[in-house]
Length: 261
Length: 298
Image (tube, rainbow over all chains, first blue to last red; front, side, top):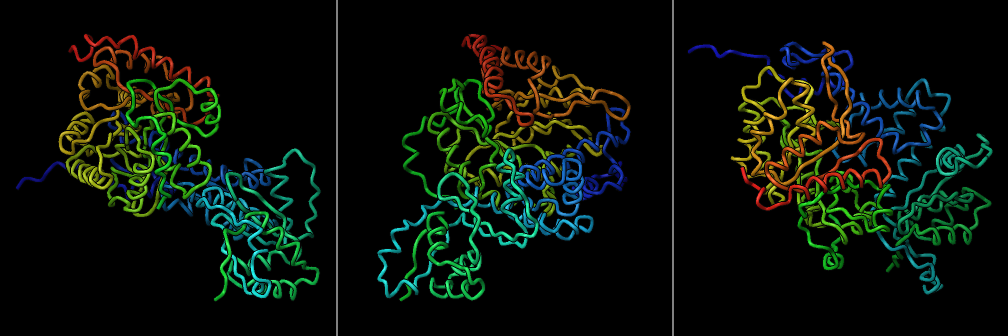
């Protein structure tokens, strides 16, 4: 049997590894018109991968980019892409680990509010693409038998998200993304919790009142109205049930009620 | 997976793509398109941008679909990949086909996924027998799963594989023959690849199996140079269609007659009037060559 002439075979495994490893050379067997190995040609692919994924992250995390500046964001995004390349061709789901990555990124240790800002931006994107649903009519609660109101549970709207932070994330996200023309004073000693909803087409952000995050988080977990209010009250004295409940209902955080049998 | 939308279906224009120019749909253009009732033959979308559960993207696409036929163009299936096709992704593609009833459905001769890692670029494949067999199996699987004929787009490439044993044209012709899929002829990709590999675009086009072509793509490319300072064109979709590409396109249409033609402009997206004027330029070429006696005269 004669040995077949054999050229180097370049598999997608080797090709892919080289795309994400800046230290790796050009895989053998990839050539230009002169038949020679072509590192600069290969680097077009490497560049396409990094740049297009960085752009996807820029699109999802504009406040983080504004806070870090273009150059720093670009370097951070590159580091993230190399460590966490997408696992799905649907890029609207790319960047789920970005907030945790920022949190664990040693050079940014002194800026620990960044991760929570990234969480708000990630949840904004999830709300934008969430399943459509009509929000609950706030009047529905008034029609409930007063003796049963405490035992009522709410059904969370598919777009509703909650981010509670020990940093002023509501102010940081507004000034770096949604209200960039407004002068908003940032007090880093403040802690803020943000509710994100999309009752129809527009994603809305709300600053929750004191105890509102505990209350709403409990409701999202399926706790009864009475128990959620008690929990919030126990943690924050200034918690106001009527104010928080009214905020949650008017923001479209729920689709309906679940009465206990 | 997606909400049923029978109500919209009845108020839609016919699904068939007319033999006219269309434009790649960009979210920033949608309200102007709808308000001005823009005169274009069809719109094309990247399927992956409409794989969320709900929200503005689907609402906008429903509106567009009422007034225009739609072409669904996948960019992430990795038909040329060594690993098997992502079944969940196939399901999402099938669901979009069902929901929006696109007149055309296309994907690329390229790979983008290995194992679970998605590289977000259209990466090249070697033109050899094992790759041909695998690509044909994948296309069979797509066409069976989605339940319709697909178009496969010729690639823009920057490197060649030493292991290739056949030409790109032989490879594409064999795929079309074996799978029955149609072809999407990207004339910009022909110009880019032929320049990059120092081949004649005219010769490539003269041998292209035009009877299988269901759609043409035109887009802009960025000039660069390679390791030896030879011209290297990058398929950037970030500017007007190049003069050289318009000339090749006119030759193709003169030769085979009008074919639905899409203008792609995905980066540094211009205002809608600029994109529309590119589509109108393609429409003029189609109209100039619409004489039925010329069509298929060769």
